[in-house]
Length: 340
Image: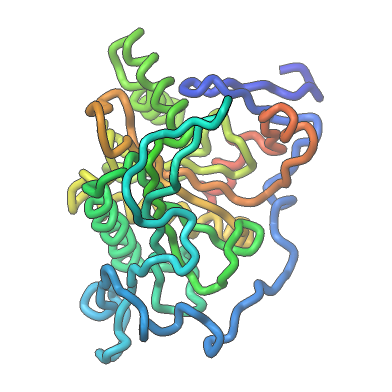
């Protein structure tokens, strides 16, 4: 690489480009959040503080599972799943695609649920192992339930942490949206995976996992079954992706044992970000195979964690090319060194 010249890197799956802006490269400590107070909604005004009057779709108890010593009482739930009060997609009859002159449209039929965590101020990054396992079990349970519903083509599970990440309620919660289409970003990822498989007869994500294991320089954490890395084509500073080491197209089909290892990798990755970047705002989501159609054996589910370390400006909006101001190799080295 020429000194003070940025590096363009192309994603092996999607074909997208990113810029590693070495000319304006920052040190890891430059990303530390200044001492700040996150706005915390008073408990008395929090819509998630009680389940009273809410339709509870799924609930896990806190005691006996979380490892925390809380007294048993009627409020001793740990995670509860409820319908979103203001859903982006709502239940209804499945509708075919419609046409209006040049344009296509269809009703936004689907499901929008909220996974609420009991503690009003404990961030997901500080959950213990048992608690994180319960989170993933709740994800899996709702995914399995909704994947059988008519109209549902794809389910996205995501978590917004902090106002800069779009969390309008400070009480920790995740969301699940089931939609009647395959989202464009997912469709491109699936198409790229399929194209690679047809050309080389192997899973592109498995190839990348093995390459990262051999290199080691972008590994943040690994256990027996999961690998956490700063991807070669990081769209933002300190991006993390978590992959199962063995080929698995669908998140909802993972075993009980895999949930434990996945929870370990997610918990450690989030806590390293929490400590290393002083509690940054972030989003994470699970990309997995669609619910219907082919078996998608060419695909490989994974978790993507994106800290809010930059804001899209004119270049990013005009080109779709994101700029990272720290090399993923440097970010991984820094996060690897964070002691948990």
